[in-house]
Amino acid sequence: MILFGRYPDDVRVRKEAEALVEYGWKVHLICLKYDGQSKQEFFNGVQIHRINLQQKRGSKFVYLKAFFFFTIAAFFKTIYLYNRFHYKIIHVHNVPDTLVLCALIPRLLGAKIILDMHEIMPEFFMRKYQVPETNCAITILKLAEKLSIKLAHHVFVATPFLKTTVVKRSTVAEKVTVLLNLPELKYFVSRNPKNAANDLQPIRFKLIYAGTFSHIHGVDLAIFAVRKLIARGFNNLELHLYGGGDEEHSLKKMVSEFHLDDHVFFHQSVPMEELGKILTKMHLGIVPKRDGVFIGEAISTKLFDYAAAGLAAVCSRTAGDSLYFDDSMAQFFEPENIDDMADKIYELYHDFDKRQTITNNALAFIKQFNWEQVKNKLLKIYFDLDAR
Image 1 (cartoon, rainbow, N blue to C red):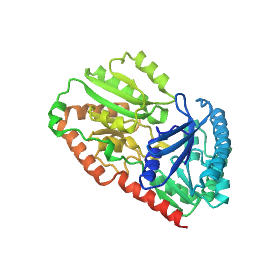
Image 2: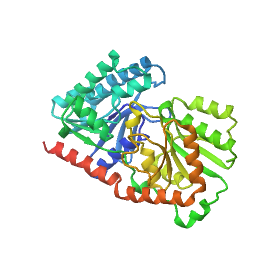
Image 3: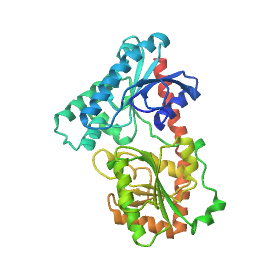
Image 4: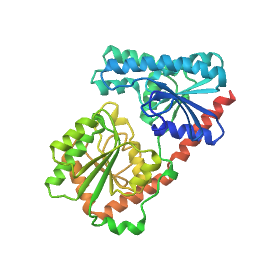
């Protein structure tokens, strides 16, 4: 596997890698090295090879430069490792799509390539840098996407919407499989029904957001909603933010300026084993993301995680998050409408029965629709490619 990112923090990649190990595959993974990490590590059966690249946040040029140097380093690392281990399959995780070029030599020597599209690059770039579809960079990204898919023997995508776009632009439906990033139930313990009475009038009513701190994910909107609720006298409200990202500094500054330090708390990202335990101590999950290009059709994995932990959720009503959850399974609000978000949080605080109904419906759904089903699709593709 090749990943331009952090491992084992990337939950999707970790679940896929460990599922393969569980079924007898030997998995090596090339990824970025961050401060405090070893260049070589054996973690839960996965052999990790980290590339030491000074990864900094910044402009489009900074990101493109980092992509370029990682691709070059991963290209030669892949050749070196292939000569030693003769991999049957090279599984490439985007972004960027062009990481498939790292597997070009092994492909010529018989290895199969899987391109795993967590994001769809042209739309991702359009939203992140606010450029129109007519921009020449978007045209280049679409061409790169088409070439990368052509080089791959099979393509995984993160949502049905991505499959529709990819098939329309670049390939045939048979070559593309949707792999949702669903929760692995062994890491989640549902809230104890015997303690439900304690949630009727909790001393501190705790909201949680676990994910990326970026503009499109709307964490700032959640802080605005908390500010409104505190102004209404909802003084026992807490918002716990787990994660990190480009907006972390500005979000902390906002909390300080609004004098919300006793109500909004920042925490570092935690592994999925820890997150499952933390969710059981909360009263309500929140998905405050914005709508629009790219993000509107993304499916929030945190919504599934909340369900797996038996935690009701307040969620922005986007096409992606309305695809699997309906009004009986989540409390939806109008995207980017801070007043509506605040109203829905307040309603669920006071309406314990509704909160429990949402919890029960979402939990029943996730018990039938979780990582086990996704894992079986993943393994089928692997064994099919291996048999060719």
